[in-house]
Length: 508
Image (cartoon, rainbow, N blue to C red; front, side, top):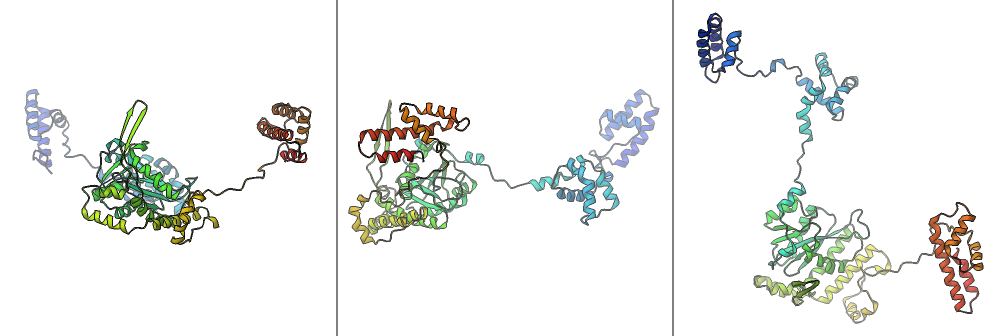
């Protein structure tokens, strides 16, 4: 083995042996010459050379690895791993405390068989050594392939505000979710993925049975197949189903510009927020829908909405908004359907325009409306199953005949019809004044001007601990009804028996 200067270990030891004897017998000047000679040959520090020449010890060629002094070998390490797993991966200090009884129990039941030397070393190992030996195992067991956090992903997605939409070309979409959870957001229910083209207002929607990022990508694929233009960009809110690796990777692969709105600024997505109410809620309503059947029914409804809204439903488009003090003036474009706006855009391919015109010529708006009403009736039957809300089976001819008179019926959308509920006439708990109401009526007849509060205090004084203060409002409502009945009795001369029955009924 050689040092960095090329001298071998054995040669250096021989030189040190000879120089050590000369160094011990030499004078001061001679020692300086010997020291200079050894430093030149050994290439070591002068102080270190002095210590070597005084003691006659060799220079260590390299740091000792301690391999020959290893106490805890692989057998001890494997035993500790088994004990660590059997103890549910506890820390070294706790494992050290349980090792004797744990190893004894495992040997007693035949799960472990240790040689006496290995067993002794395992029981003598310290808690710090246990942690050191198990550190690589713990690191490997605890390692997880973590996805990038939402905070890191949001830094890769630029923000687009409402003021950044400066006349975009067709193909830039705003996307959002419309939830169909009814009065409660607990449990599973359907979400509608809605996309609106900012330029034309073209709106598409697909139902998703769950709020999941991979389903969002599939929904965007389905929406892209329906759109008459190529998706160039999407703008979403900060929902976790949108801000994730899955959608970001999809946009990067498809070369789609991906932006997001500011948090808690719904006006940044004004285009899609408008369509959520004017299109989705208008045709679907606010009831709760869940399950595959409701999803299929919603898909049929959205298939009709695709043709009816985009070809036959004109909408306004905001061109400019100015503010003078507290007055805001808005200027709108002439109402036009999304199809008309795409036909008027000069950069749209002529073949696409021809396909749009041909499709519009073949569509029947009355038939589409009939399909919409049938799908709405099916949805209403799912949310409130009853004969009155079942899907209508009327023919298209009958539907057309009823159009001139349908306005007499009021609301004709089955998803928005509110069914009358039966008034509640029963009590939900025992009447607290049931036993004393006759006595209260006698007090009122003697003193009709007595207030409900004074009567309640009289009851509390007469029946100690029976009427808490919270029941004052109940007595006030009872006495208010009694005064109304007495006023009617004074106004109408006849009907003496009817007010008496009503007075009795108040206490019941």
